[in-house]
Image: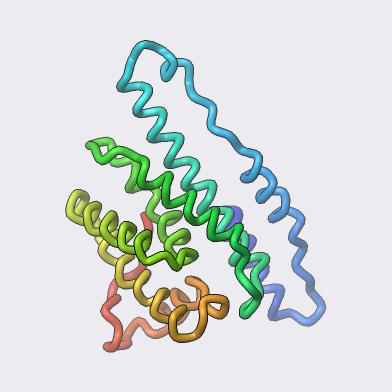
Length: 199
């Protein structure tokens, strides 16, 4: 929530002639995210395999969010359109996706809480195999949960990938596509007619 508010402040300050956005708080958040480590509760170390699995799912979900937020920080606060995207960013995206895939497919539905980081990561990866796995996971969770957020993510990801293909990967990020789709909600040319929902 703090990053979203800071993003709005940055956007607002960019439209003002004598105001410069101070990114000190963003840097503090970024350092905090990079140094964060999961700490298992004492119950996870007992002789209870169920508690251990639950703790591992929580760890994978939290790590996915950590990676997703780092991707968000880079794209919103550091990236300039047209600048080369560092391989380090693709590594963070891949690790994020791997953490989402590592969550179990059971009734606890922990993995569904990582849809937004999965979306951020999916937009940063060009590997076709990983993209197909992301789309499959969204389809599976759509079937399991019947929440529109999973089915609405698939066409949005495809839209981002298509625009990256047409305009060049270093010239397009998900924020541009989402902003355009919100501005053109009434467009009949796009299949995404609902409000974007990421859980």
